[in-house]
Length: 172
Image 1 (cartoon, rainbow, N blue to C red):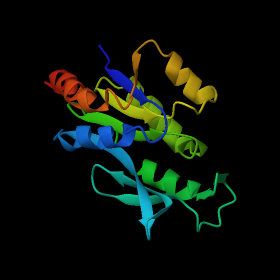
Image 2: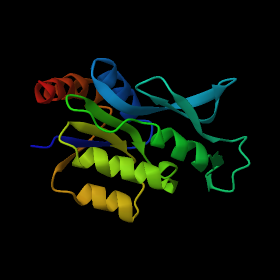
Image 3: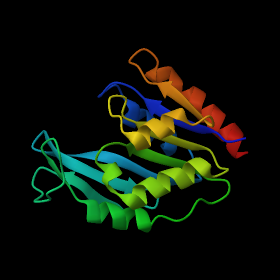
């Protein structure tokens, strides 16, 4: 049985922090996190960090990219290259993506990775922006092999241990 979980919720509710804490406690994992790039206390972009420690700049206010989301220029080429270098799903690993959002969806490689992780027999967990909808994200939400869990300020601290226990059980 597949264990696919999409964590959704309002912006800044703690989805990425929950994801980071979850994957930190799992030894066998593959995927990536998205981290804010902060300069002088101001968010100026986003960086991708793989389980192997590889990094790439996803977006920046300083980017000259014509692909824009809000004030950020999205580096689609860097995203395509970053995702292409990720290894295929390996048995016994937790698969994870933080996050499935508008910036990432400019990449064909990213969409293929997300679908391959969802279709793998290993447990998969991802964050998905609650307020972003398109054909791809709506199709993910509609999958019958995927559980959608809303992260709120009230449940974000208790969800971590519960999800970690479920994941570890699935990996054993």
